[in-house]
Each structure stands twice: as structure tokens, then as C-alpha cells.
Image (cartoon, rainbow, N blue to C red; front, side, top):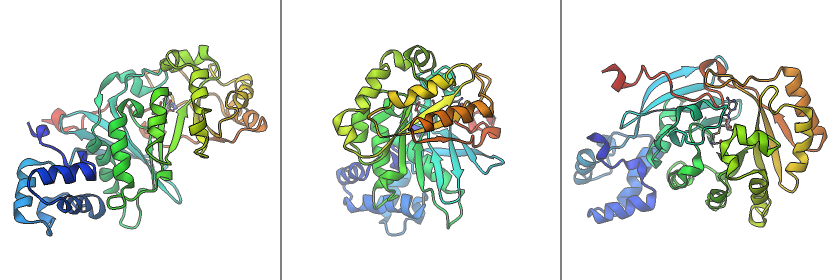
Length: 353
Ligand code: SAH
């Protein structure tokens, strides 16, 4: 089967150099290939005209340059674009491009489905199929970049799509290495954000990658409520999670932790919740992003009304937190937070054929 060929995008620069050397090609050829793929946006080996014929033939016969095929792009009224992408083994995943005035943020997936089963999340309702490879993470960036005009680039990457990034840390680490490699995409680490539901032991290794941003899905101010919403809380309750974020090496990074708080009517939206937040987050340089629940058929939770969202945000702000109430982007095409389920697969080749 085709999927057994190695994919060029699964390799970090160092790994590809070592692999090429082993096969008898000089290591610098790996740099040239990566530069074609990431810097020039060329995937057809025939066009890589500074490579010798022997290497081109080898790549064409033994390797894949692409890990994902674009099957559908949906465009929201607010300009958000959702990509349905198919892996080489026929799985469906989604990525979301969020254009703003001064930046284009791409939200990437790290797993097919997710094993964490957060009760309000559409991806959680899918169950877990498998981790994505490095190449499949990188290809979300390449497939999205292809729809942007020459002048605009993807400026920010958030690991906030389908899946729990910290359950796939090796591939996420390699992908961040490629995103920030000066010879490939040369992104600044501060333009990359990884979000976790709170897999405490993997947070430190994640932050050792470099000065990237950490986002933590908080969603509750008591263990009773968080146990219900984020079952992982039963393994790593609030005092353990927040205690680890207060630890010395994390504090010395001098970068705020972004806390995500999805507001659900009657569940976690009281003013008492809002007032508890500053105490809970004390000692952690924090920014709080409040996001009204995006309703979807797999969960019974609803967003509170606008007045409740505003009052919650105001209360947290007056108590001293840096807080932003987020607009829901792309909700009309099910591209908003927690709505990614790649449910409509009619565009996949395997379904069509
Ligand atoms: N597993 C990681 C990465 C996913 S990020 C994590 O949990 O952080 C996606 C964000 O959207 C998370 O904060 C998640 O809790 C939130 N989310 C999930 N379902 C949602 C919904 N229906 N409405 C609003 N936010 C939701």
C-alpha cells in the first residue's frame, strides 16, 4: 500500500540528513529537498531542478512528498476557512484558518479523534483512532498555505484542533522544530501555541522545546465541575495542574499561560466562579480567554446569554485578571472551538469510490 512509503514531511532536518547519508546521498541534499517543500512550496520532485537525476528517481520511486490530500474547503461568513483533509490511510481530519486584520492563524489537529472524552467537545465524542504523524501535522500547514494569496502567509499556529497535543508529544515536538527551522518555515516560537487539557507530566517537556506559548483548557473552578467536563481532571486535579504551573522553571519563562474557559449555561458561568478565578490562578502569569460554548448535537450544553458572558468577564476583570471574551469564529461551518469532528466525509475519495 502507498502509505508504507516514507513521507518526506515526517522527517526533521537532522533525521532526513542522516537518512539520505545512509542511502548514499550527501546530507546537504536533504536541506535542498526541505527547502523546495517548505520554502518554495514545491512538492513535485520533477521540479526540484537542483537535484541529481539519481536522487529524483529515488524519491519518485520510494517516497511520498505529501501526507494529506485536501478534500474540501468551507468558508464561513466571517472568512474563517475549514479544511477537510484525508490521510494516506483514508482518515479524515480538519484544520481551520482564521484570517484577521494583521495575522492568519491556523488551528491544527494532532490526533484522529481524541481519547480524553471531554463531555462538551465534539471531537471527544468521536473517540480515538490514532496519533497524527509529524508529516500530517506539517501538511495541514502546507495545504492551508496553498489557498492563501502570494502576499499573505500563515503567521500563527495554534495546536487547538482535533486531539490532545500532549498525548502526541514526539510528533508535535518535531513539527514545531520544522515550523521554526530557519531553513524551512522560519516561524518565531512565540507565534506558536500548544493547548492542553492538563496532561501535567508532559507540560515541562513541551516547554523545553522553546519559548512557545502554553494554553490550558481550564473550564471550571472546582474539581467537582471539572471532573464532569474534563475527565482527565480525575487524574490531574486542579491543585496538581495549577501547582505544576506555579513551579519555578515555568515561572521563569516570563510568558503568560493562556487559560481557556468555555462558558456553559448553568454549569460554570456563575459570578462566584468568576470571582474564584483570580485566587485559583494566583502566582501564575495568566491571560484568561472566555469562550461561549459552541453548541453541537453531541452535547447538551448551551452558551449563556450575552449579559451573563459579559458579567462573568467583567467580574473576573475587576478581580484583577487579564481577560478577553472571545467571539466565536466559523460557527456557521462547524469550525469553532470544539466543533471539529470531520463528520461529513462525503468528499473523501474512499467514500466516493
Ligand atoms: N485537547 C487540547 C486541544 C484542543 S483545543 C485541549 O483540550 O486544550 C480546543 C479548545 O476548545 C479546548 O479548550 C476545548 O476545551 C475547547 N472546546 C471544546 N469543545 C468546545 C465547545 N463546544 N465550545 C467551545 N469550546 C470548546
